[in-house]
Length: 319
Image 1 (cartoon, rainbow, N blue to C red):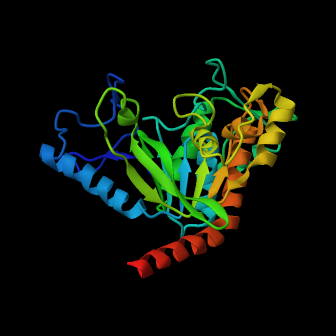
Image 2 (cartoon, rainbow, N blue to C red):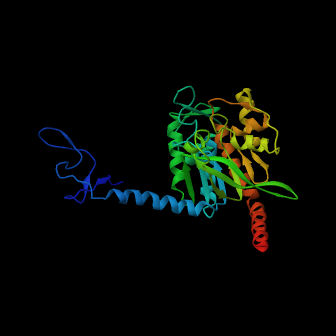
Image 3 (cartoon, rainbow, N blue to C red):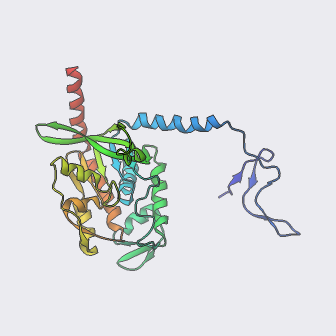
């Protein structure tokens, strides 16, 4: 592979591989005396960002699938969707400025990441290296896994991540068969956290055919969709039990499903619904629950899409 080059005003190509002078043996990566960035006006920077952001808002306000939460389960689901269905529009809504959830560290500020088999097969698909310890593998740093997964998800042209954005509520439709989710209600996270200190600040909306909720169990927005469904009397919360790795991981993966029409729940948010155990710092269930969430969403997508299109047709007929 050719070395990356730095473009300068006076030199078309300056290799960034190190060069040593014959006398001093000093390192030299570029001709810094003549180096200069290309000119730019400050407003150009603002327009470059806002033009693209608002174009994305316009594009993804009607999405096929919305994923709530960009942690290990939500991003694993996004990766599977992006890889297998490039025709779908997938919006990821993440409340934090930094995506990744709790998967930047293994546990208690320790960096290594433990994945029980067969979760390592997902790591193989990502091309990650790890130490094989028999029944489990160890990635040298959880950030290595998360940064790799995140970069691959963001490369997909049909997936958009909206971070620093919170899901405040869901969009619902009621018919003879019951309640169905048809989208999410969003706001800037800083606005959502300050409703009590300001006057009313109305949210935004995204319509979709399936919502995958992967908001975890911790933090101000943890298990947000599950709690909202409980308020709407659609589910009864089981509340997460104490830590038991051997039962927790199997339960999370097997329990990943469409909980009510239009809503697939994945990851640790499921523990609040099903009353399963927490698992602590082992991540095999997170990635495989994400895989199953993508599978579950795809298996109901056409049915939910047909229902939503019927709603739109009925609404247009009334108008």
